Image 1: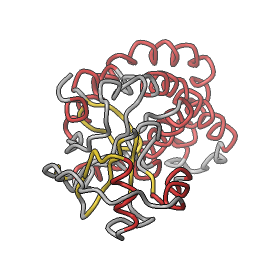
Image 2: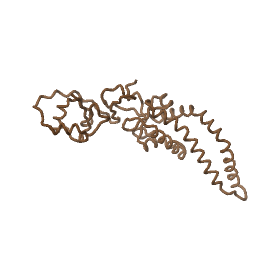
Image 3: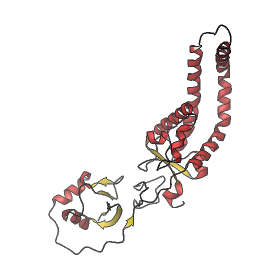
Image 4: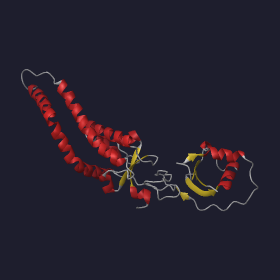
Length: 265
């Protein structure tokens, strides 16, 4: 018979046998708003949304039996991600969804990961910039000539075409590294080489891994925000509750320590 878990007063309860679990609803100890989970469910779900529970509650109750004593409750810390078990990936080793205290990666740990990834991408970026230099070189020359003319008697017209073209090329150059971050952070390990080195992973706020295109868009927005803010878009990671930078807040993602999810494995 299926065993059920549920969240009550901020604490995880269970496992509870199905017959006893249904009786708890009939006795009004649980309601349709209670978060529940059982094997076969992808994640914690409100009881009122589960069809099989509705069917069980509509059937006549069995003869009353003395329920077994409840085991000690496992406290649910305030900072957590409720993780349902996965058939593969980060949580394949868990048989039941046991909420655990999640350690979020702090500002300096994330800075170290960015530095390591930057070193990995240094040579590919240099090659890319070298390939674009026959186009960007003349554009920069035109812009430099305009800046110099501002200090002369007759300023040259603003090189709008050159500025726009240069910005387009810079955008293209910033997109290429996004494929590296998207490919790595959407993998089962959910981390780039830099994040692997500091023991961090990137997840959605609900604990699920990122898709390739979500990871791609997240990285592109991060690069764009950093460019416009001079890196200040990273500062929220130093003081927000979940250590989220601005791009994390936009895409509802978190960077957490892998050991806090897997018990150090």
